[in-house]
Amino acid sequence: MSAFAPTLQAFFTDRLARQLQASPQTIASYRDTFRLLIGFIERETAKKPNRLDIEDLNAAVILAFLDHLEVERHNTARTRNARLGAIRSLFHYAALRHPEHAELIQQVLAIPQKRFAKPTVSFLTRSELDALLAAPDLTTWQGRRDRAMILLAAQTGLRVSELIGLNCGDLRMGTGAHVQCEGKGRKERSVPLTGPTVAALRVWTRELAGRAEDPLFPTSTGRRLSRDAIERRVSTHAAIAAERCPSLSAKRISPHVLRHYVDGWVMWPVGVFALVEALRGPVPAT
Image 1: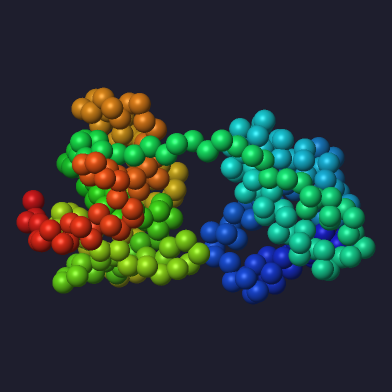
Image 2 (image 1 turned 45 degrees about the vertical axis):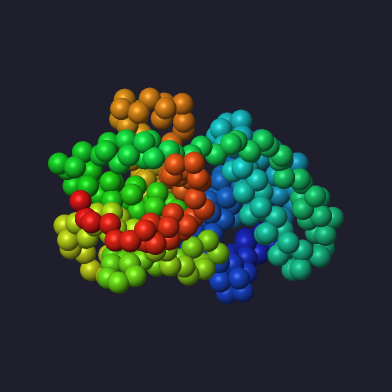
């Protein structure tokens, strides 16, 4: 039996799940990395996954795999670096279990992250956000869901993963209205809600009539929206909004851009806009 298979399994069950208590999203990302890597090696060498050994994952093979991600799968440098990070984590773990492969492991760990230029993040002005909020078709269930979701994302600065994970029970819409969520690094945080957001969410949750543990923004079949689905919905509405607000045509509107919103001349950090709105006093529901 090769050393690679039990090492890989122990990495997931012992290192990630038990020692680090990694989130399901992290485990899924690492799983996809090694699924792609093992598939690549099998195609290149015709060697079955159950026959792979640590020697088959040398630095030359890993570099070829990283090139494959960029050239054939058209992944960005950021994605390439994330995949390399997962591979490095495995090899750090393997170094303690298999010192006989110390030289090979050190060569893999020496592979550098790829440097890349970070693009300037776009932001939304008040008029652009208004146009985006007006784009969903409110005569449809999906349109009403999307408008509530976009409004919540823009006002609170929630990440896509946080929006996906929200349940109906995470909303507190009484005095001191706020939303609770599990943020990056599994940190719990609460973000205050403005009057217009509360009004929109009240309408949406009445229509949804979900239980506390149900997704706040589900698909038509009741499942959670995926990251890709949210990106598609935002892109679709941005294209419609651009007809009304031409400045949107020059911007790549993604869920992340919703976190960058300019009110007047000030770009508010996450949560500050909500605090300012709350200090202005109650906003009548519209």
